[in-house]
Every structure is written in C-alpha cells, then in structure tokens.
Image 1 (spheres, rainbow, N blue to C red):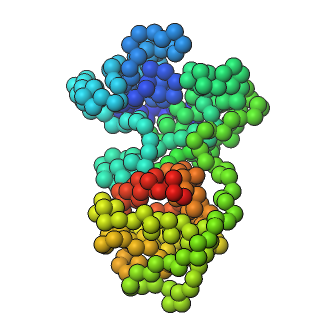
Image 2: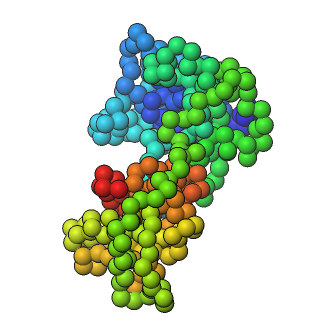
Image 3: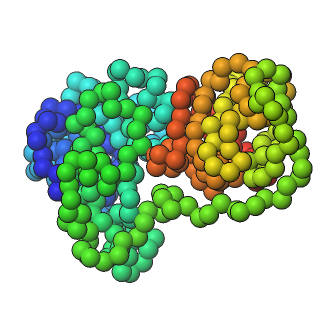
Length: 345
C-alpha cells in the first residue's frame, strides 16, 4: 500500500461520486493527510442495495482526519455543479484538485490550462470491487476484483505530482509500480485468484482483420509534398482511407479545419495525410502540402482498428499505442469524425 505523506494537508478536493465506492476511497485516502473534501453526489438517503450517502461519507472523512462538505450534485445539472463550487469556495477558499469523468477532453483541457491546472485521467488495470460491480457481475464476482484502495493510492500518487504532470492517461498498476509497489496481492479481494481485466481497457485487442477486400482504388494525392514514386497501394490502410475519402464533404471540412498526418509502422505503412482544411478535403499517401496541425504515430493494425471503432483513441493513447504531436483539441475533433465513420468501416 502507498503510505500517506501529509502532502495534501489543507488541499481541497472536489470529488464527484464520493458517497461510495472509488470516489469515497479517494476521499478517505486524502482525508488521512488532513485534506478538505467536497462530496459531490446525488445520494442523500440510504438506498436498499447501494450503501452510503453524502452525509455518511462526510462522517467517515472527518473521522479519518479531513474536513468534509457534502453537496447534492447531479453532474448532468450544470447549475448544481456551479452551486457546489460556490459552496466549496465559500467554505474552503478554493478547490485545488478535482475528480471528474474521463475522456479525450483530458488532452484538450491539459493544453488549455497548461501551467495553471494539471489534468490527468486514471483507469484501473483490473475490475474494481464496488456495489455496482456486485449488481453487474453477480455472486462471486468480488473474488476476481481488486479493492478500491488501489485506485485511491494511484490517485494519491497523481495528486502529489507537480502541475507539469498533465495530459496523462494513467493505469493504476503502472503508476504504483513507479512508486515502488511490488506486492499487488494487498489490493486483491482474494489474493492469488485470477483477476478480471477491466471491461473498457483494450490491453490485448483482438487481431485486426487480416485482410479487407481491396477495391483497387488508387490513393488520392494532393498537390504538394508527396511520395516521389507514387504507386498503387492496396490493403487495410488504403481501404480505410478510401472509405474516409468517400465520407468527406465541405461540411466536414468546415467543421474540422485541420490537416492530419499519420506516421504508420508495419505493413502498408508509411506517411499518410488527411486534409480537412481545404475545400472538399483530401487524403493520400505522402506528406500534406502544408505542415500538419496534428501528427499521429501508430502501427497500421492499430490505425485500422481505431478507425473501425474496435480500438478507442483514448485507450490507444493511454497504452502508448498512439502518440500525438500538435493541437490536442484538433485531435479530439478527429475522434468525432471517426465515430461517424465506424459503421462504414
């Protein structure tokens, strides 16, 4: 287990879903340092199947050594969030750390607030035992899970890092290994029992379809920089770009306004571009005519899987399968475009 150091004493954490489960575990870990905790959750009265309310959580937090502010918050209601933030500022002066839902927004927010606020995402390597897991997994599922303590320790490790640690997608087990943790049995509900991989962590993706039907299309080259010896290409990557090309329109270009460059390794790899800045848009093999706004590096297999919806960009980035350089906000725009194309791919 990761020991407390007292570094979060006096810090204020705004935690959504802190009345139970992972949110409460993070709150209690920070409370041992003497942190202030804003408990932002919906549960104000006991639920027959889900124990814990914002008030019982507040009692546990204060018993652990922290200060608590229970706030009724439905994260779908912007006004409730604003009210809770105002109450937090009034009671504690300000809040310095927040736990929200995670998405590709982490990348954009990390760039937007760089130097001011660190924005990171945290995800478990294995299933975590919570009341929700009992409801979803049924009897006996807990033996395949780890305790919420592993997420609390991983979050605590992130909280202790400087502001320049930002824009990261962190796996709980990985960051704790960096902290020197070697015995992960202490986090298991049933030490030694096989663990269930997290449902959304695409750690060992299925093999990409070996071969997609080739339609014999020739890549559409854009005037400007390109391969000095253009040739007809075929294979999954070329087929993917062919379908992408068919999806282009002036509306897509107008809504995106970005040039993307893909550095792909493996069969059918090389440098490819997707121009969503100029009229009609274009795709092709080679470098774009002007400097790309975003450069993405990955394997051809993962590229095809990402565009077909079988590998989420967030997971690819988190696992080091996707490297991004350039404008992160524009990278997020491309993810939205991919979602529109998944059915065709």
